[in-house]
Length: 259
Image 1 (cartoon, rainbow, N blue to C red):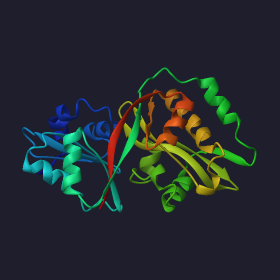
Image 2 (image 1 turned 180 degrees about the vertical axis):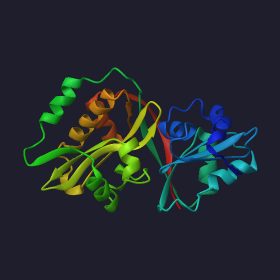
Image 3 (image 1 turned 90 degrees about the horizontal axis):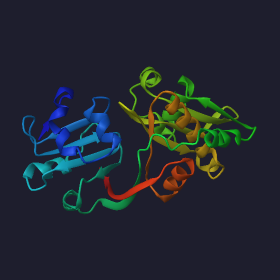
């Protein structure tokens, strides 16, 4: 099992070619994430870890594929990791290696269509923001605030610092009495766009704030020539995505594994 350097990512591109997952693209393009394989010359199986997402591809029959599924690197500090199998064989391997500490569930991919968004409708969503709230770009203060609280941590967590976020990230937050209560931001980035992360403080949910934040972020991405990719963790997230203009693509299996 070999950890790949950035200049070696092209070696595993073919293994992941049929997977439309921005977390994979982010790593292969050298923006974020890490990768391991059974060889850096002629790999037959590989693992990509970007953020909380661990994706696998290639041949599952080798001993090395088992090592890859069992590889949760020491720098990964969260209590759970999200594993995405390329197919049912990787899923079976995940279940075997992590037999007593996984939960299987379904995620929902949306189609990556560039011309489906109704800008006027998105602007109309933003206009519905109640007067007691304020919609603002994520600045240094909000960046620091977001990574200090559990509910908002993933809005900016994949960036090394605010300096890194200000150069490569993009996001908006909603304030109530000067306090961040909802946000939409780039969880990760890739050449053509971002993967959207949306979070709202528990007591402010079901008020339409997530839709407003997301609408503003989508408009900003389109203005910059970036695609705002949306991968839904549950049916509620998918329903919100569809209200914003996205179309359902497919359901796929994922695993939450205890570290």
